[in-house]
Length: 290
Ligand code: HEM
Image (cartoon, rainbow, N blue to C red; front, top):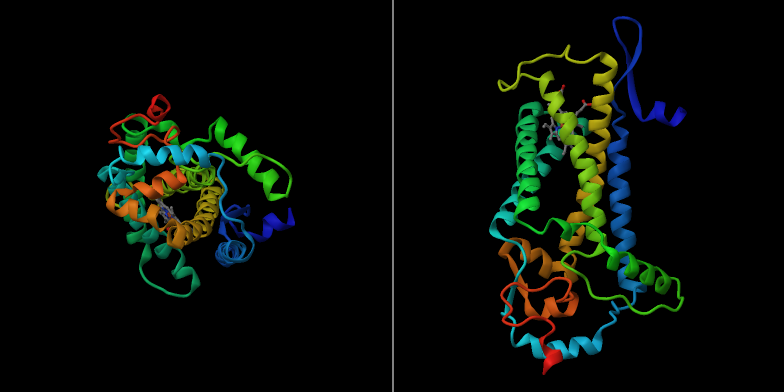
């Protein structure tokens, strides 16, 4: 209880009731330091301790070298529409983070207008993304499947030095990306849903201003949830940018700009049965009939 009291800023409403008004802003530093610690520990781990990625199917992969000839040189990964969504969302997310938190750490400017406009862009782009991913993309590609769970178990055992077969190569998205996407859904939707209500508190010209829509207590909790999701996003966005900038992930990052990745990178990291390449002139099984 004491800890909860400290992470929230309280005020007394006109009726003498103690109500939350928003999160305590030191949480900005907690999130930034947590994000930074993750990056430093991960980078040290990779540099000094991690073993090379070991996948099960080396023999299989040699067979696939024959398949390479049938694959296009560049494997399509993200369509133009998916890339446009990604970068619009990224621009609005950075605008939201900077407009929300710079004033709280001492950089004063008239932030609310930029913030709610970026919030509206983010809300619209996420709505678009949900529809696009449900009907045009492979909706299930981003959710953990049975192979992910089996492989996670093998990877945990190998991490602790116990015997286990090496895992398979990945589908389009490794388990870590899927879990990250889940965390973004939870924090992003919390910020969006509360943010849409908070639009009623400011003069937008779109919605009628109505600060009396909810009780002081409910508004307070709304601001607290918005703030918690917001600081959570500081750490999550830091992690995301860090992984995008890591040298071994640059091919994936570039595919979010140019849309495709090298055939060699694809065959090295992805299982053609779990993520079949678009544009291949044969199926991944065809070598067994050779
Ligand atoms: C996703 C990243 C977002 C972050 C990091 C973020 C962060 C914040 C923070 C820290 C505040 C100050 C709250 C307070 O004083 O307690 C705030 C206010 C606000 N946010 Fe966001 N927010 C985000 C998304 C959104 C979205 C998507 C919308 C709209 C759909 C939105 C609309 C608003 C509005 C209208 C306010 C001002 C409320 C007021 O001044 O009374 N925000 N935001």
